[in-house]
Image 1 (cartoon, helix red, strand yellow):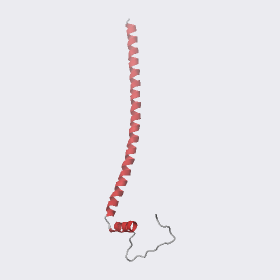
Image 2: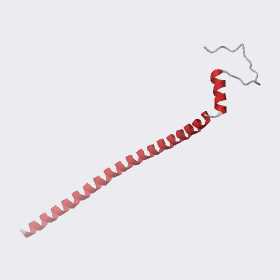
Image 3: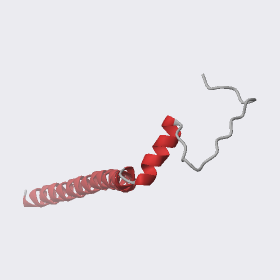
Image 4: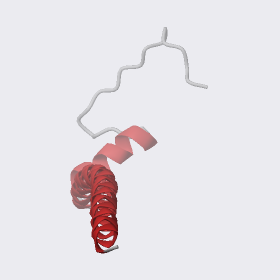
Length: 99
C-alpha cells in the first residue's frame, strides 16, 4: 500500500510539474505576442509624433510668415492680381482665359 501511495504521489507531482511548465510556457508565449504588438503600436505612434512635430514646425513658420510684408505682397499678387509701381505687366493674348 505504501508503495502504491509513493508511486501515485510521484505521478501526481510529475503531472503537476508538467502542467506548471506547460502553463508557464503558454503564458510566456502569449506575453511575447502581446509585447510584439505593443512595440509595433509604439513604433507607429512614434512615427505619428514625428509627423505631427514636422507639421507643427511648418505651421509655426507659416504663422510667423503670415504677418510679414512679403506675405502681404505675395497674397496681393496671387489673389488680387496687383503689381508694384515699378513693374511692367505683360499680357499674352494667345493664352486662353481662365473660366
